[in-house]
Image (cartoon, rainbow, N blue to C red; front, side, top):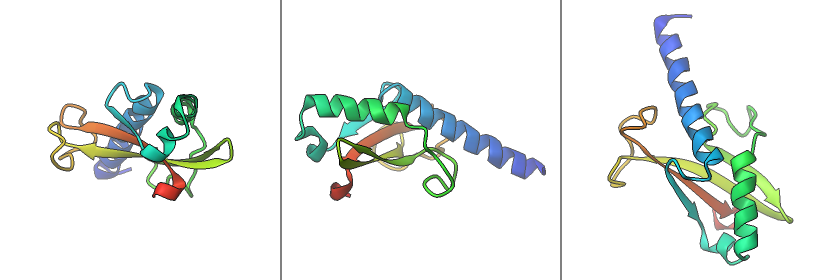
Length: 117
């Protein structure tokens, strides 16, 4: 593996680990956004959706082609949900200059109904 390939793999692993940490912490290491459609199903559904996303581990080459664990799809009580991690600068004004650097990045985890996408 070349130095450049090694650096790219290390960067990808760092991003994936930070995204997994965000999901596992239920947004505590960044921000958590739950859409109106999910909220309309009640707090119990919201809590279950957040927990389902925090424990999601069904990543594969089809749903995670970049191996960063930044998107997923699951079904809860017959409702298809998506989750997505976005990377913003610390002011939430624009895209992060470096998704692998937690000092420069605010991660935002959004949970939505598939129909809201």
